[in-house]
Length: 216
Length: 254
Image 1 (cartoon, chains in turn cyan, green):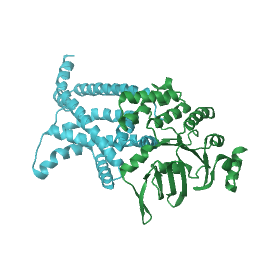
Image 2: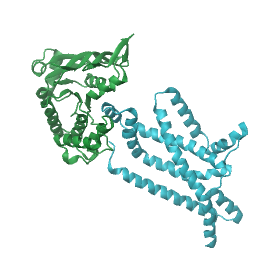
Image 3: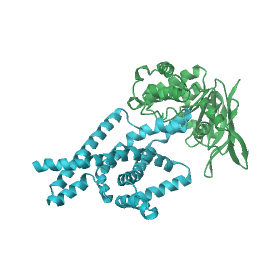
Image 4: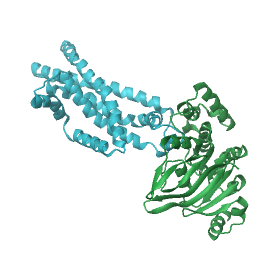
């Protein structure tokens, strides 16, 4: 029992890093994802092509590789080294923005054309139409898909350790080999499970909040 | 009579087939024009061209003094400036077959949204005006509800209220009762009749022949993208001259 409490204490030192990666990724990747989704839906062919290639590369390569690339590429190419944690955040934001963008895009496409037309004939500008008419409906539609992706983010934070950023999982592995025991990994698992439960709960709340109307 | 809308030799093509072919007509102030015809005859397309979701391929549309098309160069339509198009757009109101209410906004907000966002009206003033319009249209006890909890007839009436809010000079209705259960058609037609009695200028695309007869000052019968016959309801519906019109009306009266 004492060992469990002790392990919890040690792993909690990584909790703040895990949470920080999680929160910062959401803060930056969601707006970036919206921008990418808009660029994808735009009529500009160059913008279209750039976003398509970006999403293809991000979804088509392992995230572990991306994290290592973001941190080491500047060093190998220009001999610039920088903060590891910053590299993790950059890699996570670039990666998750691509997945979020696809979710936003599917949401935008699912809104009936008539909504845009009605807004247009009432004189709304393009940005008014997007932010006041389309986006609020998109948010409701994409909540289930977003909840999926955000839950996966909780667990993916464990990849930060590949460039030596110490979070829950890195500490757990260290303790496991140090104590020659599976217990630290189990405790880490329980911590991730707890975090995911909170996220699930939050999304259920959100879905309830948006249930006052249905999109027909 | 003061003329509000003029459509000149309007052409709209989808790929290479004509949806609307050289259609011309005028609408005077306070006049109700009904456009009838079978599905795919180009009725709705005309409304969509005037209200600008669709680009036209040739011809011109004039509302009051403003023209949509600046010039036609080498068979390519060059539209007028955005300012003019926006002004024209605001002078037109559109009521859709499928209502297209904003589902995330209450009935009241659906009506006030354009007033506060587009016309930059004061919030309180917009609310007051919206309440008045909704009361007149018989939705006073539904203002706080969301479109999903309204019947089809109520939704269409709310969407008419939303259009009235921007005080358009001419209201277009694209088959306003086609998506409704038969028993709900009446309440919407009553509202449209009320608008007609207020001498509002309207262009209504409809399948309700009897209704068109009661409400319209003039009727246009279309077939295959062209105007076949045009005149008063008595002329077009009671004494049609063209064979195509007779055939069409026969199906409705039987």
